[in-house]
Image 1 (tube, one colour):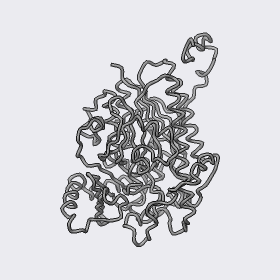
Image 2: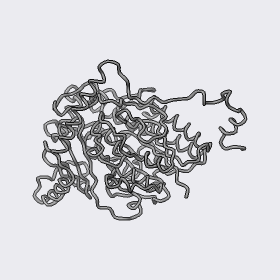
Image 3: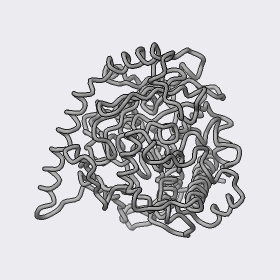
Image 4: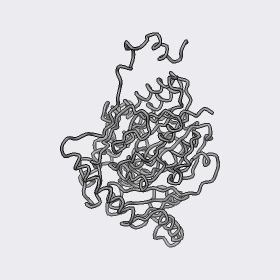
Length: 502
């Protein structure tokens, strides 16, 4: 049986609440809406960890950060952990990445046979948090509110330059795959950095939202003293005291964010049109690594278990998965088992250590009751936080903080913490027991501290003397491109044409 091709379209920091059933109606995203119309759509899908590197390592491996040990944006992703790229490649697939995956460490491939671009972020240990210094803010790499106050229009930025390159290489790769020089099935991952801040967009996309009714968040700013302890830590990490955010700046930041969704929609459209033009068929997955609070409650970016930060869009277009909306909570750690299931690739050898599960049975009506688990142990935390989404409930626990319990159906904005409400003590006790069965928070904390301390030693050592970077260096063999004198021109022209003979 021929194995299906797989196209993964990944974006960065896309708020899943904007995808209640595909893109919200008011978003200018015709290509994503067209994809949604032929996909299984997962309304309540969550990141494994609301930060780039840990969320992506979990997405690729089907394991939570406590198992991958990718706790933050400077934690090494071990080469010994199988990813979907390893599983598929082992089964005979070509595996290729164009764009971001925020791998930290000397292995910048993690199962990909080919990588077409470098990454946008550093792969070393320089962004390591330090629990030994709670409250310390490292200005040169921590987020700050300058992304909000500086929101506006530009025709080129660091991130636009990157995503333009990602799309170019992806479409070029699809053309190359269509030529049929390699008979193996393929898995192409195209991973963009937008709509991640800074909130800056091209004018053609900005203007789409000049009259948008959604430029202010549903929940306005909450006074610092009234925020929960973790939200206070996030605000401190984001240097909130040195910025006075105005309503106009909030509107401009959100307008740029929405504009960049439309920018991405154009990129997705280019890629899907190329797939169609080259007469190739593929399973298509659209996903984000985590969300963005977008000013809701006065919070920005991610690093939180609140819905805007933790919920992500997931849409899968595959023959084995019927078109429609699934409301059962699921996780990004389910992606790797799902892809392997769809490709007919066994994960049996590593399933005892894989926490994700295939979404194919759920999409086909099989009931699923397992809770969704999330972890966070990076900047803005002084000890790990863990969370369970179980049915309509969301429960968060941390050694340093009071428990949080929210009824997401009745209180989608998470304004009413029910942890101290008498009639909900049974639910709280049930979820606390599930959480304690899964996590030993004291041991988790010790594990993170050990990792941080080790990495600070290694980073400082490697910066002393000659420095050899781990950045991925895309290799282009000029002697193998276009026409060269070791090639037969007649054969070359025939082989590089698709379709042939028309």
